[in-house]
Length: 99
Length: 212
Image (tube, rainbow over all chains, first blue to last red; front, side, top):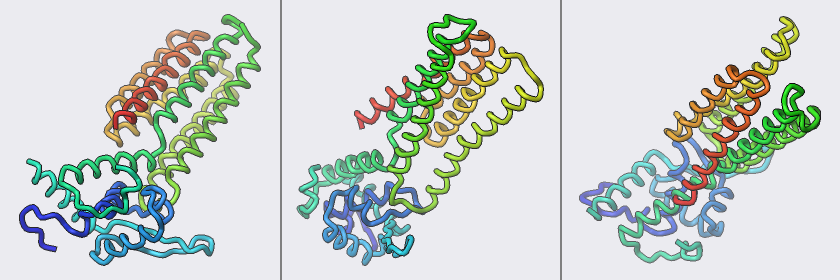
């Protein structure tokens, strides 16, 4: 992922994925969120959110872990360091374009 | 940004993207952290009515209502406020795991342990040293305000919130002043200055939330 001069990261630069990334970036680094809570925050359908998360995961921006809580499987989502950096670069590129 | 447009994959202009980032961020922050306007409003109201009722009931004061009634109303309001604060906190943090969970739990326990220690100390003074009713009254009223002031300042330092810090300082001043004005006027200082500061903060945070 070599970003040259302001060029927008295509993984993040899509409305739905940008919203997902913003929500995950709002969590302090080291925190993760369950899939249903993220879905509720974003008001997206499960299928839609899964699709976008897969794309973010393929880019290495998001880490998805499965855990068990009292025998119920729970899916956690968190932004990776790479994802957090990509989002910062993306925001910086936007600001640069507007100046 | 309307919810139904979430599926649209139309290209966004840089300005639209930036606006989306700040809108979404504000929205997410609001649902991830408990409403401070609500919490400060709740505690401010409890504090203001509770201490004012206690003042109106003190035997050496106006004696407008029985002391047991004022005490019962105050205790019920405190228990209700604690329960509501827990519900609000738990609701905001549901589905979140990781490091901030521990820091939130430690912060919450700081309040609880602080008040337990204060209770133990005050009971000790009253029972062991047999201090006068006046000293007992001052101990029970100024201690909570001191703890609240310090913890408010600590939270403010962490969130870099200057107005919140100012309210904490004000609470410390009120805690100190309440001892000097003596019984029963100290109850009025606690109710008006203490409760007033919390309500002022609630208004501040409500305005901040609306403008975000």
